[in-house]
Length: 157
Image 1 (cartoon, rainbow, N blue to C red):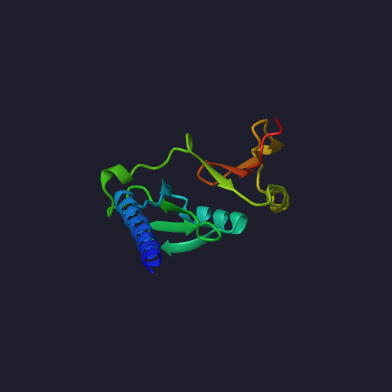
Image 2: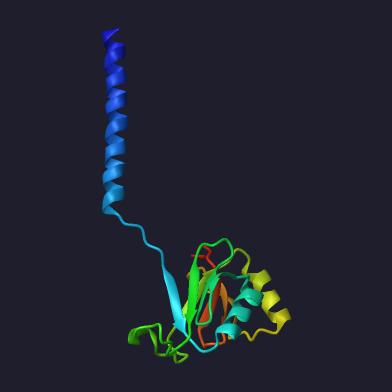
């Protein structure tokens, strides 16, 4: 009986210590979500492009702001009108169409490539396999943002 009590106490101590350690870790690690934003006058064109070609949904929209989400709601992307009076100066300047890209990982890059071609979306980089393992192609949104559509695979070597 004494041995059974000892085993039970050790088990309870182990579970309690594990819970305490997990609780301390969660208190020390804050959670973050990322929502990249682009300041553009082309909000309606952008909405149409992302919904029709990439299956994005609209999370929130008003006259100067559009928040979109990927299928499955795993990521968000927002668009804001430039020079809007509700925004501080830091968020008023329009994107100039260079120096930004998005990478979107997809399950079937070949199928998506075929759909983009059927829809007449201009392909900026034809589908290809890279030595490091990516299979991808690239398009461009109405704002000049390059979009790399990729299926990650293991490198051949």
